[in-house]
Amino acid sequence: MTHSYLEANARERLALLFGPDNFEEWLPPSARIVSPHLAQLDAPRAFDDGVVIGHGALDGKRIFAAAQEGGFMGGAVGEVHGAKLVGLLRRAIVDQPEAVLLLLETGGVRLHEANAGLIAVSEVMRALLDVRAAGIPVVVLIGGSNGCFGGMGIVARCANAIAMSEQGRLAMSGPEVIETASGVEEFDSRDRALVWRTTGGKHRYLLGDCDRLVDDSIGEFRRTALELIAAAHQVEIPLTLAALDAEQQMLQDRLDQFGTASEPMEIWRQLGIVDPQGIAMLEADQFMALVAATSARSH
Image 1 (cartoon, rainbow, N blue to C red):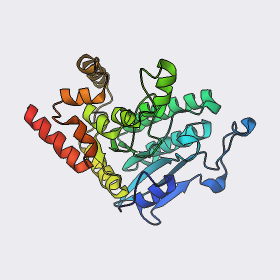
Image 2: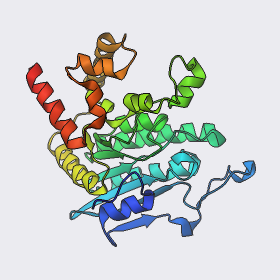
Image 3: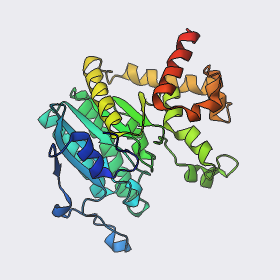
Image 4: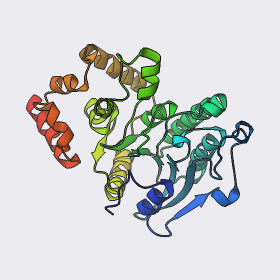
């Protein structure tokens, strides 16, 4: 299971995660469920609308799963794409699987279907929270080359847990969007090192936005997903107003502590990382060990 998660497409990721003949796809390409909008704009269409949904057995546990295809419109969400995700989540409430896995790779909402896509993302968010309220953990995996941006970045943070690779990225707005809106002085999207320092897995783990950092290996994602599912069943974070207030306070504390930093490495220094420049060279297990040691010293 040393296959690269980054280099695999959506179906390959699911096939390798679940194993041969262990995953059944719902609404496969043969069903030809396509976007009703793209043809009117002479835009390319896909018979699965860029997302794979279904269920399978993972280590003997029944798991529902969805994987976005970054190779089709960057995994962007349109009406049918979003409806398939919502349908999967709503069916989970009825069928009560052990968990739902979301393999997210997306630039956000399709500009071709902006209104329909935005509505779809909000429906996905609501359905995900309903799944959690029903006691079913939702775990997100992020390691594709397109990252997880836009409204689906918010969806990811609504899940019980997130696992990322260093190559994965997570944010609300993409680098090009920030540069277009605020100028290159605010964020230079051509500075790839800066982009990864700001939105990549290591920075997101240090800030507490993801729960595990793993190597770019489907086997590591699989092992970590099972661990996160088991942990979620043991300690469920309640969906309460108090929990929401705590999240808001965490964001305010982050602004108070790091709001003047102009570079992620400044934040890493404040967190006690002695050699922030050296982080880029560390493998996931070395990085996790360094963070654990730094946390132990600070306490």
